Image (tube, rainbow, N blue to C red; front, side):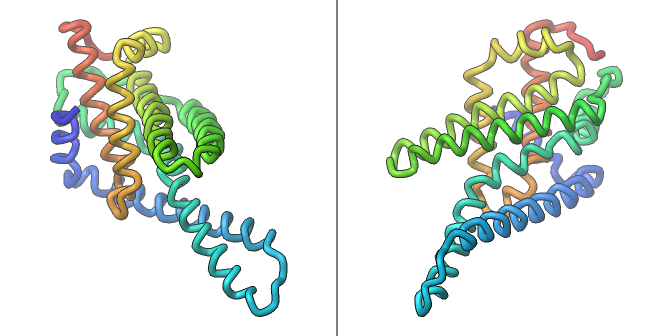
Length: 226
């Protein structure tokens, strides 16, 4: 995992990646602002008028919305990874795996559907995780385990299905479930770090391309693309 992360980090300032990074950062900011606005509206709309303490309640609603948006942000922003995943993967492959034939790629409607399904799943999972909110140790552990599992699978599935059939991609994924969990947990952590989280989806895509190619090569040293 460390090797894949180092290689991905080394390519972040590739001029071909910078434009995608800018788009990713802008999209991430818009997602966070939209989440904050929606959650703040929901919270303040249920607060009753309370005269002198209304201002305090408004401030509480704004703060609670920021906290809630911060916990939802990592998984929601990653739901949009399909919008730029294929472009990032092609850039990484061109530099590090020039011998690979062109990938089939993911049709835009397939990527969109996968993103919407993923978004629904992570929102449901994180809503259920809120049941652990009052258990100081259980919630952080559950947050990283659940989101690590979901993010690891999402990035791997989108990357692997560019070059493998669905059955072959799932078979390879099952052989590396524990490693995917650790990789996804690392992605989740990066998505909680201010500023770093704005570029994490691009970084995670690049890192997952390296992980996928390493596992695929280990399975079959003569594995080709297609």
